[in-house]
Length: 369
Ligand code: HEC
Ligand SMILES: [Cu+2]
Image (cartoon, rainbow, N blue to C red):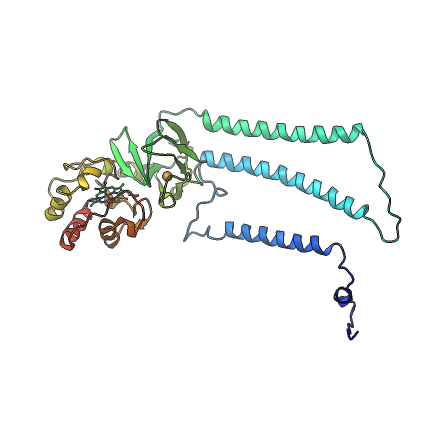
C-alpha cells in the first residue's frame, strides 16, 4: 500500500482507504448539517425582501390589532414548542452518548424500567399542563377577535370577491371601488376600526393582508365578517389566499391606511360622479357604444355594468387588474387591446378595436380621476 498520511487529521481518510468503516457519528452529522443549512436558507428567504423598497407582506411584522394578537399568540406557541424540542433532544442526546455501546464491552441489554409512577406522572402531567396553557391562550385570542363589538365610529366596508378582482363598497357613503381599499388609521385618541363584510360573486376567495389580520374566506351565499384596526398609516399588500381559478395568483390586494383627514378627502372624491362634460368626447362615445358598458359602471354616464370593476375613479388607483400592472397609459392600452397580455385567463375579453379607437378610449379613461 502506497498511502502516506502524515497528520492525525487524515486518520479518517486512511481508515476509509483501508476499508475501515467510518465512525458511526458521520452519517447523522452530515444529516444534521444538511438540515441546518435548509433551515437557515428558509429563514434567510423569509427575512430577505422585507426592505422598504419591495415590501413583502410579512405576518411577523403586524401593524394592526387582530394581526398583532395572532402574532403574539404564535410567538407563545413557538416558544413552548421550542422549549419542548430542546428538552426532548437534550435528553435524547444524553441517552445516546451516555449509554452507547463501547467497544470491548460485552453485548447486553440495558436495565429495563417498568411501572415507574414518577416517570409516568411526569410525562402525563407536564404535557397536559402545556396543552391547557395553549388552549386557554388560543381561546382568549379567538374570543377577542371574533366577538369584538362594532363601535359606532367603525367604518363599514363590503368586500366582494370576483374571479380575479376585488370590489369594495362603502354603503354609508355610496362609494364603490375596486382592488385598492382605503381605510383610516386608528389611534388611541381616535378609534376607527374597519369592519368588513365578506361576500363572493362566484367562487371561494380569501382576504389576506398579513400585516393587518389573519385570513377570512369569501364564500358564495354566505356572509363572513372580519375587522381590522391598523395603528400605522401606509400601504399594506396582500392577496387572495384561496385558489379561485387561473388568475388567482394575480388577485392582489392593496390597502391604503390613511390619516382620518386623507380618508375623508378620499371618500368625498370617490362619492362624486364624473363631470357631464368631457374633453374626450370621442373616447367616451367609443366606450358608450361598445360592450364596455355591460360590464363596467361609470357614475354619471349610462354605463352601469357590474361584472367588472367600477371605473368612475379609475385614475385614483395605482394599479389595474388587481395589482397585475401599474396604472399607466401604455398598460391601459395593452390591457384593453388584449387583457391576456397582462393577465392570461382574466374574464375580460379582448375587445378587438382599431388603433384610433383604442387611443381615444385610453385618453378618455385617463380623465376619470
Ligand atoms: C365581459 C365583460 C367585460 C367587458 C365587455 C369589458 N370588460 Fe373591462 N374588465 C372586465 C373584468 C372582469 C375586469 C377585471 C379583470 C381582472 O382584474 O381580472 C375588467 C377590468 C378592466 C379594467 C381594469 C380596471 C381596474 O381597476 O383594475 C379596465 C380599465 C377595463 N376593464 C376597461 C374596459 C373597457 C374600456 C372595455 C370596453 C372596450 C371593457 N373593459 C370591456 C370585464 C369586462
Ligand atoms: Cu380569489
